[in-house]
Amino acid sequence: AQSVTQLGSHVSVSEGALVLLRCNYSSSVPPYLFWYVQYPNQGLQLLLKYTTGATLVKGINGFEAEFKKSETSFHLTKPSAHMSDAAEYFCAVSDQSDYKLSFGAGTTVTVRA
Amino acid sequence: ETGVTQTPRHLVMGMTNKKSLKCEQHLGHNAMYWYKQSAKKPLELMFVYSLEERVENNSVPSRFSPECPNSSHLFLHLHTLQPEDSALYLCASSQESTSGSGEQFFGPGTRLTVL
Image 1 (cartoon, chains in turn yellow, blue):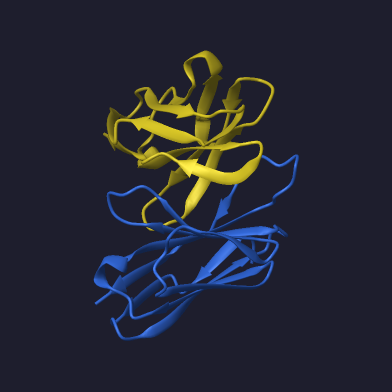
Image 2 (tube, one colour):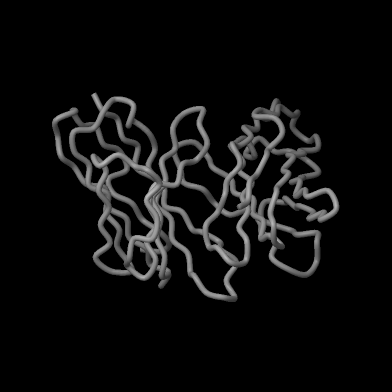
């Protein structure tokens, strides 16, 4: 069974500053990893995913994440925050034998002008 | 329509009412899901349908009754709900296959308020 831990339920950054959201997972098999974003009163939208291959994954809106197997981590970063990045972010994991996703509890990002 | 659509977007109902939530996916996927998202709580997986058969029911009370008449449509029938059932209900779909990644596509959700 997989599980996901997102460190920090709330992150506040200044506009133009680095955004770093932390995600650690546990999985007994090689995982597939995802980051989703949710804007108020909307569904979840996929930001990026890691399945196989290159461990640095680029997504939409300037976000990227790096899969580090040795650290069982998949942290999400964006070099320069924009006001439109204010949202809730969810890390999720699935394994190759089970189509279900296990989600983290989410991290709310606020961006200060 | 594209992606995953849900209707209604907002629903207010009394505890004695019966209502249904509808989800439709236009992606040709073969699996569909219902999630409950409550304030300050992690996303809760309620039901999973694979090839139109229910394959998972995560101890959901019987006042929630899912229906999947075909691979594109999913319903959640609601009756005699409680105020604590107020939440955002999200539908998702995915393509199950041995080469798939498990990526799920979500609808915008139905905001349910039970009075």
